[in-house]
Length: 136
Image 1 (cartoon, rainbow, N blue to C red):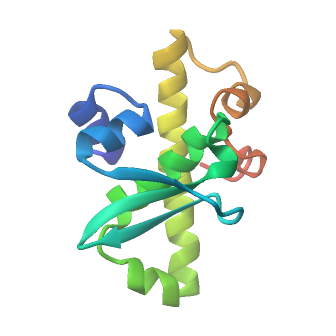
Image 2: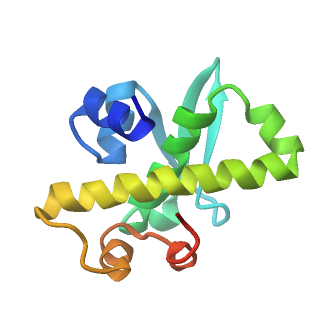
């Protein structure tokens, strides 16, 4: 079962916040400006850290989905990730791809139809502009 299907099966939604809740992944808002999100592990338990700058912004959905994607796809290899630049790029791409798919499916879940344009995903969930032509 692919990661996207597995997450939806577990949580019955594509909402990254609800998925984190179902998986017992804590989300904390902190006073940082860059990066907008990160994941730390406390006693082998992932905690997603989000910037207070996006707390009231729709961008929090994509950033949370991106960090959730790291937890799901790259769990346990955080140390290797930080020292290997090539792996870091590949892992960021994978996390962006799964986050994009989560947001696309959340849009369908929330609205009952497929997004008509990339702009729909940007406005609804803060999907970054640079991903418009970078994925797939």
